[in-house]
Length: 304
Figure 1 (cartoon, rainbow, N blue to C red):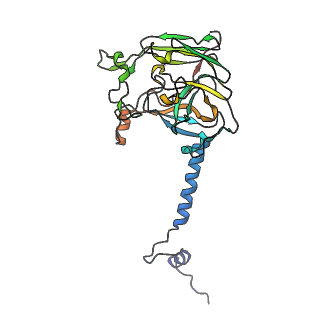
Figure 2 (figure 1 turned 90 degrees about the horizontal axis):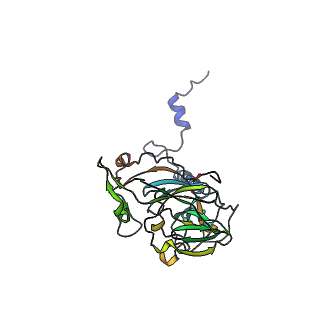
Figure 3 (figure 1 turned 60 degrees about the vertical axis):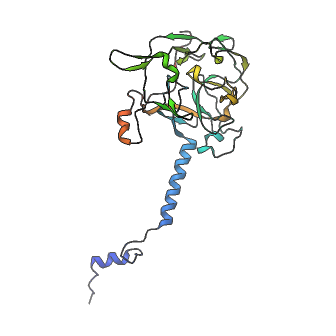
């Protein structure tokens, strides 16, 4: 005689794992933590070797990058070094794996020798170049870099935009008060003097020059050493870069390529000064037309 099979409820109970006294299945916390650890390592590896997000905190790269822009920085174009690692956990060094050299006009992130935070600037001179600045104009290998005047470029005044790169925080566009105006529509804008600069490879972009008598507008010629680049901000009179010493919060001259942490690729999204900690405010603070904007410079044909 064949015994009757156990009811489905009995079979499922027999195959079930260990249970807590209340009938609940026991959670394997070690397995959960191990899975979380692997996921964290994968994120850190991507952040260190492929790409990472970056936030623009200051006006040094205006008008091309605005405070509140969120962008993606790729880690591999110039090879990997100590600055590539997440949170700069590696000791500072000079070695690079699969090294490469930036092109004129690339926007890069750099870790100054006396700091641990990332700055973002533009490459204007390469290894071996001779660079000088005369009346605010770059002279590269004895030839002035062309600068074409661009009239009537309007940027939103963004009266709520605060910069926190200094303490206490301040209105980001204080420096542009003389160029502030209100349009007939009621919209508030700033119209600082802008130029279109074009480097020898045809890379072209806008710069702001509003203080022709500033000390940053004159620099004696110097040679960029091997494995170094000369970096400048696009907001020329409000950028601490390779023109300034480390003591002046600058980059202390040409920077070694081993301190370059990656290349800026594109803007993911941008929020103006009306954003708050409430995520619901983000939609209204979203700047139109900036999402997915490429940060690779346009190139004009040589001889044009």
